[in-house]
Image 1: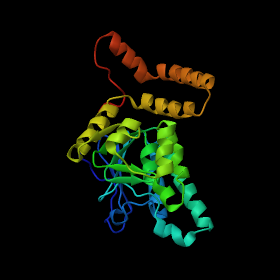
Image 2 (image 1 turned 90 degrees about the vertical axis):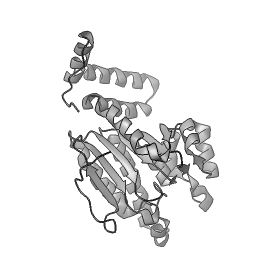
Image 3 (image 1 turned 45 degrees about the vertical axis):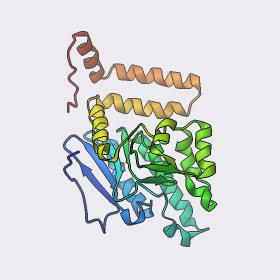
Length: 271
């Protein structure tokens, strides 16, 4: 996928690289390859700061989260955490990570994880929290904290909302790796393709999302996550309200008219 850098910096200085292409596709690259892109406090702050302005940016259409080096993300940086054991720094780090996961949900844009290599613990959490995920067939996933005596409680939150309960518990209780084919079968990722086809598969998904009206995507995403936390009656009420608002959106009216006239719709945000 061709991109035009909007902001970048030398690899030794920036834990996160941010690019935006002319279509409004924002690519966030975890850039701590020497540490397998472990989520240090600095990286989490960079992710927070990169995502925050996108919430009110109508020109941003899709977010792709990827990683440099051999791995997607090895979870939290244990070397950074070790001196803080028992102190307030640990609580701050987990709170920062949790807020960022919520920030991803709050974005109106769909977020795609492009996964290669390993995604463990909070790295697996990151994959699960993204709206969509495309993995290379060499990718491996684990919530391996239990092997260190630290149950992956925070990764369990999106994991339990993506996988069937017993699948999620198997990952959490055993800490064992699953391969990309298993992750696809269990619902952790949407697609699994050979490494050489990974970028093309992500681009196919990006192009599909760009062909849809941004307003419908934003309303639908917000409703989807809100209804997950509701009872059945409340979920249906919210869904109906959202569809009423969606139906009166100019893009929707154009889409319906185009269907009736047997022509391609002309969205307000053509790509």
